Length: 546
Image 1: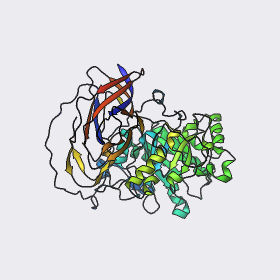
Image 2: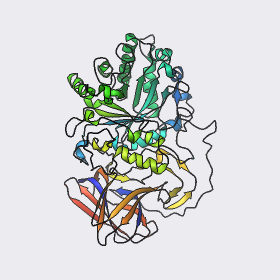
Image 3: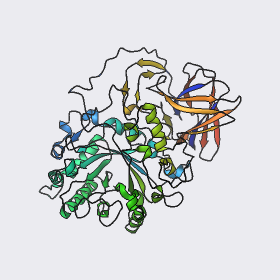
Image 4: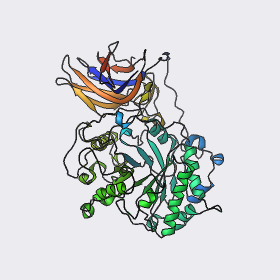
């Protein structure tokens, strides 16, 4: 058997201006039989999402968190994710898009996946508007950010978020937010968390394990910013984390750089003797550093370089330390001294931590603006990960400069409908069966690893986008608009990084449509570098064909 590293779709365009393509299946094995069905638009039965009986995602105050049990959780069946965490391809098997990408650098995104802590439906709503994050290839961990002193300070990820993250091989953490007193924080809440039982154990730690395992997410982000604690409290916090890890070593804990070893809230903006204790001695797996390392008054101290050296000298992986960048206010306009993060060629001092990565959505004026901001934020202004900004100015450079495009596409088969997880309609087998707005991230498909790598011959110019007006299955399709075409010239669009096994009799199929005649070929690049071209067996028309 041979393995493929990348998928290409070669669009050989001599005529035609539009190709809306939905990749249905690249099944390497025995293909399923295609059954033709006649679907009709249904009369809408709008779910009562806003009723008092609708299932909602969980959140608690500390005392209520300790009272939780699976047996008494009426919404448990809706809040559990049953999508296993897909194993990602080893970075060593992946080819960088540009020479600056470092295979060790990771990204954690702290994101407001829903607009509030309370009242979030477990699995979508009857609205199109939602933060449907779709650059999973650039992050390793998603922190479902939330918590407030007026609603609840312990928040689990909603099930649709866990489902989509797991499909993309991304781990998900819930949030334990112990706020500053000026934001309603109470020392008593921390004391409840740190209270021991008669056996000297922390019931709160056991509950953290139970909830995460029952709901199906990977662990917790702990943000302790409540003032008025002491060194004993800090020691108990570390011991609580150690108990979590002892009860289930696979559970992940990420610690925020706020509380120090003496119990005070004193942001260090680096890894040092004041905070390193929380990631030592089998305590937290990682630390999210505060944001001020990039400010003018601290820049000359080179805090990330010091963090890298401290980590190495204390047997800590520097790539488990995340340099915090607060993008909530300005997203793609956030000034960052990238030279402080960089460590020569193809390396960074630490990994990257993004606070409020969802700001590309909350700051956007409309859907198109959101998509443009996302592209500039995660890739770059040119929407091509091969293009790297080597300047040392503080403008947003695009995270594809530092981080490899990762992929969870492996095994014997692969299917995607390119769904973003929302829509104005719903389609099945190319026919519209619903005209109701919706969002449900559990239904999102695997999107292209590369956004975008397009090689045009002649003067060809292809513009990719997502089409919500036409789809094969779900709410949208992948659309390529040909702005200019030269006769006899082709355009190569690199879509997916993969590690698929190609067996004898393997089948590859794509469902596509075009408003003019169009021929398409698929190119598989094998592990040995050989490229295999598969010519389409029919010309496309305005109707969906497979």
